[in-house]
Each structure stands twice: as C-alpha cells, then as structure tokens.
Length: 316
Image 1 (tube, rainbow, N blue to C red):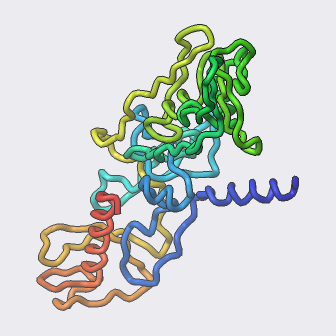
Image 2 (image 1 turned 180 degrees about the vertical axis):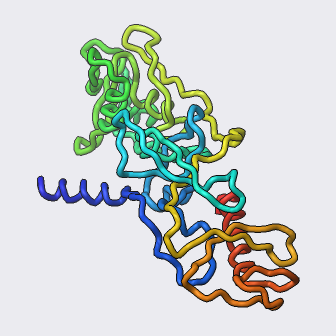
Image 3 (image 1 turned 30 degrees about the horizontal axis):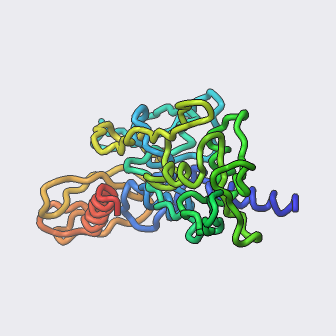
C-alpha cells in the first residue's frame, strides 16, 4: 500500500511538471518567435483540461500570468528569466525577475466554477410518532435528515473542537416526538452538530455550488452560519500585461529579421536561420522579405502567428 501511494504521488507530481524546455529548432529558413518560448501558456479551460483540476481563483494583487515553472518553490528566493524585449522592434532580449512562489503558479483571468449540490438524501429513513394517544408513525421530512458523511464534512469545515455529531434517533426520553429508523443498514438519520440540524445547514452551505468559498461564523451558543465569500474578481478589468513568458536566447545560427506582410501594411518580427538558404520572393528579393506585392512563406508564417494571437486573446 505504501508503494502504491508513493507511485500515485509521483504520477501526480509528473502531471503538474512544467520544466523550462527549449523547443526543437525548426528546419524552415524563417519561423515565428514563438519557437523561443520555454513553457506552455494556459487559459482556465486549457489548464483544467490538461491537469484535471481548476486553477486557483484569480488573484487581483498579482498581474495575470499564463505559465508556471514547476521547478520553483516558495522558498523566499527569486529567479531571473529572459523575455523578448518589447522596446526593440528589430528584436532583442531583456531579463526579468520573478518571485519563485509566483513563478511556480499561474494567475489566470476568469471565474472558478462550482458544481450544483445534489442532496444524497432523497427518501426518508426515519419515521416520527408523537407521544399522544392515537398518533400514527409517519415518514419524517427528508429535509430534516442527513447522512453521516454530510455531518462529518460539516463538522470538519466548521473546525470547532468543542462541537460533536449527535444522532437524535431515537429521540431522548420525554420528547414530544419519537424517531425510529426504517432501514438500519443506512446511515441516514437526524444528525445535529450543536444546535444545528445537518440536514438543513449543510445543503444551505452549498447553495452557491459545492465548495464555494466562505467561512462559518458563530452566531450563538453552538450555532454557526455559513457566510459566502464576496463575489470573486475575474480579472476582466485588469489592464496590466501578462507576466512575460520565459524564452531562450538565439542560437548561433539564428538572427532576428522583420518582414513586411504582403498587402497588410505592417511588419512582423521573425527568426531566420543563417545556415539555411533563403527562398527568393516573387520580386526576387532574398531572405523571404517581400519588397513588392509578393506573398512569401514568411508572410504565411506571420499570418499564422497573428491567428494564434487572436485565438489566445479569444480564449480558444
């Protein structure tokens, strides 16, 4: 069992492994600067699809960040990475420093989602009978009953060591109503924590979805009320740029070039291999740079890069 647990732990660790790794160098003569990135970027949807869990809620105290480096830990140190320098239109690099704790996590815009709560108690397992002559035993309202698992989860979340779970079946002697169990093999019963009926309080705590953040606040003797956290910030109004994605430096056989995208009126930063022959354009210009109306391979690469940027912006 110990070996199985260790194996599962290692698998989980590998699943979240994001180590800065250089991409293979393309064999094309000219290619996008995206090949320099050392780590993948994520949206909330792609993060959950990749790792099977939601990313943490957006933290408005931090700038948005789409990547993480699993080699970093919260150790009060910082790490220096390289980024493409946005101030150098002809291409260049600039170092930036990131706190290790923040380097190890993403900070993705958007909201967490919470599944609707489904009460596991759907049929009564308790009958009730009053103490007066002629009273007939009838099923107790399902909303007053709960499972032991519900009671245990609620007690753990409240975290008050002075409280304990009490099963009110059967009712104490002298009670106006007496309870009896219908199916002894079921743990559904009338559980109380302090003065709180679990069957009422636990579903109410999940009213905004399973696991919605908040806290239990004491409102009386052995009574707590769950207070949901304020509506979270989704980051949609945060205009700060994303933390830059770490990149590698150019290889000895690479250089930056800019090309005019045919017919679109703007230039785009690309990488050119110096050890690969550059195709001539329709106008006969070397290096895949169009001086006229020709549409080069570099133009196509540029358009692909623009398309990818648009998809990223739209969260696709």
